Structures are given as C-alpha cells and as structure tokens.
Figure 1: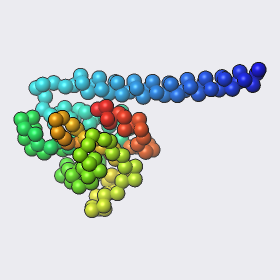
Figure 2: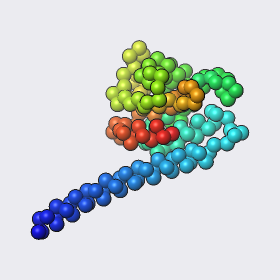
Figure 3: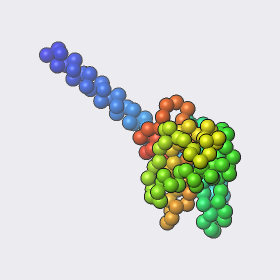
Figure 4: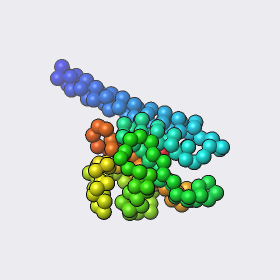
Length: 169
C-alpha cells in the first residue's frame, strides 16, 4: 500500500510539474501576443511595429537577435524592408540575402515554421558564422508578406515551444 501511494504521489508530482511548465509557457505566449496586439496602431509605420515585435520576440525567446523581412506590398510597404532587433554581425542587406537565398527555399511557399539548430549558410560560409541557429516563420496575408526570424538562442536549441510561439505571432 505504501509503495502504491508513493508511486501515485510520484506520478502526480510529475503531472503537476508538466502542467506547471505548460501553464508558464502558455502565459508567456499570451502575454507576448497581448503586448504585440496592444502596440498596434493604425498610424504607426509597419517598420516601427515590426521593430516592436522583434524586440518582444528577442526578450521572450532569449535570443541574440530577431529580424523581420518584409516584401514590398503597396500601399502599406512600397519597398522591401528589413527590421532587426538585437545584436548580430549582419547588415540588413545580408539579412535580406539570408532570407531570400537560404530561408525562402526551406519555407517552400507554405506557412510552416523552419527550424535549423545547426545552420550552415551554404553559399556564404564567411557570413554563416554570425548565424548558428535560426527559426523562421512566414508573415502571411492574402500572400506571403515576408518572414520573421529568430536568430541564435542564447541557451540550448530551438524547440517545439519556440516553434509554437513563432507560429502564434
């Protein structure tokens, strides 16, 4: 009887720990989405809004940088734009090149999340040192508007929680 109770207590503690972790993750996700939605203003430029989103993503996901690559889609955005929050040894032009040559083919024109925990920039190994790991998610409207990138997680690899968070954004 004591052994059965001890096993039941162990299972209950494990389930409680799992539920607590899931609740914490869901709270962070909802808090981030609330913060992002609260910063939306009709009069705000898309670049300023995306900079706020990238800054929030950088803080919540504990990454060195977040970037948004936005393709021209008048009347909102008249030219391709890159917005970067955080520290990374790449220029906006290099981030655009990363997005168009490496990430876009991986996205394959659909709305899935791409995770590369061992990223290698095949055609620019000199620039590949700046990006170790990356999560990319397309920004979708009626068509693809661009992508949101999370770069170089400070601790560990990107996981399914990070993928879910990026998809929600």
